[in-house]
Image (cartoon, rainbow, N blue to C red; front, side):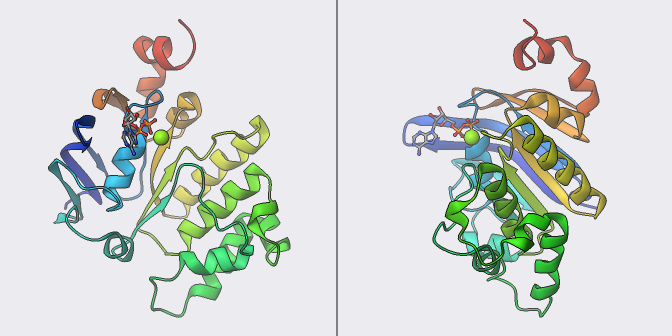
Length: 237
Ligand SMILES: Nc1ncnc2c1ncn2[C@@H]1O[C@H](COP(=O)(O)OP(=O)(O)O)[C@@H](O)[C@H]1O
Ligand SMILES: [Mg+2]
């Protein structure tokens, strides 16, 4: 059986700048897979290309064996790939409920109410504040809403770009606990993080990206023990 997502020899450029160079990785259904690496490595560019917001210069992106890299973004979302973007990108003047409804706009089934309740069960504070405007929320609450909004499309693959960015240690822990819980509920997750320690600890597979290239890959716990990773990304040098 094909993996849920397969990225093959992907290169992406902004004009003359090659941001992603020949990256390959796979995400099996049910896994948490992480892309880690320093600022500017090409992680966000990779996720935006999978979402159809950028086009590859070369390479392929396959969802259950079917190429998606030439499809428009709304079709990729409709095929089951949701993206919680770096910086969260909520609609600040809209309420929690309205932001969640927007996440469900590609769906045609009648399970939207039930899934909204599922988001509120996962993040009770969002339920309590469902009629409040998103722009008034703390960074942690906005991250919860960004994840909840992505979940509302009922994705087969949930991509999270820097979910812990700018959050307190307690809020970071809560977000990582939720990622683990989502996996236990059966969601497949592609995670991008600069917090390598926390990301590797919960990843089935991880890829280290440096200057647009994959430099190391392996199970999260193996990379966590790798001296090269510890020196470069875990602040032990
Ligand atoms: N819109 C853009 N135009 C030109 N260059 C960009 C743009 N976005 C990102 N880049 C460049 O592409 C490279 C990869 O960036 P990015 O994918 O955002 O990295 P990461 O998410 O790993 O921090 C960097 O060198 C960055 O400066
Ligand atoms: Mg980024």
